[in-house]
Image 1 (cartoon, rainbow, N blue to C red):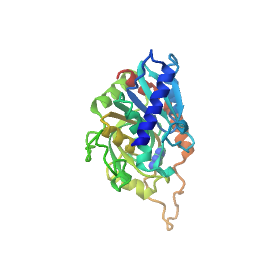
Image 2: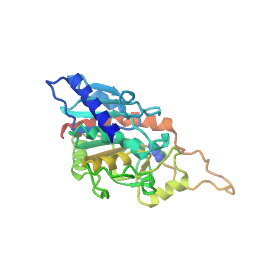
Image 3: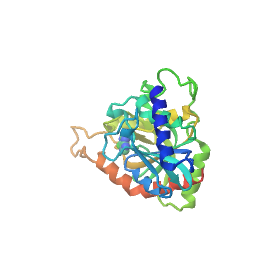
Image 4: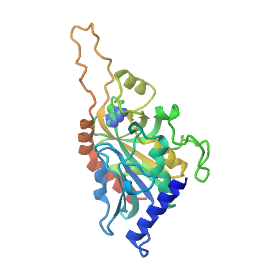
Length: 299
Ligand code: 6GU
């Protein structure tokens, strides 16, 4: 609790020092950039110059260790809306607790002005109708870690922000999703935008074939290793949430070849690779950036 207030005071000091007392800067939207999507920082206006704060300078903040995830907070204007951008996020598989992953949201909530979270991620498709480099607006989730107790709201409740037993049936704001689809149409983006259920898994392994079939069987459309903890805490803070997955690859759903097959399908066919995730995220990132910019500008 004290750590969170210290960090918020530090950030308030940095914001005042940078933007000056004349231009009061009150961010209204937090944007979290997923794998390979940090390029969205180019969409931040250069007038006034944005304020960049490395995670390492913020008391209580931890730096991410993964290639493709930098570690900076960027305060600035996106399409005239004052925003904070989190370039780089923490994951559970790095050894962070769910509380550590979501501490930046608790800290930024102390600034008192943020009411919307826009979060992007890279995900694998388990819906066979999806293709790599397409997009999916998340309208619901299944968190396997959350169901098993790796949960950001575990422990004493933050009564100041939300209830002990938080509903998540309304986590993904309908108006924001409608806005996303209308901007997708308005901008004439050819890349398909689906809508569906995101399955959150702990990683760091990509799913086995049988795990992938399990995830499909329970009703998910894509699968990834992030986002849900941040969404849950943002909802606990009373923020509205928009979450967008970039489908970087299609998960292998077919059973493994049997040792008794005369002509076995090679096991490595369709195997997930982190490099593929990064390359495909980069291919679609310009559309994601354009979409997020349009949505944020309309808030
Ligand atoms: Cl295939 N699985 C998981 N868990 N996360 C991913 C992914 C797959 N592709 C991108 N992120």
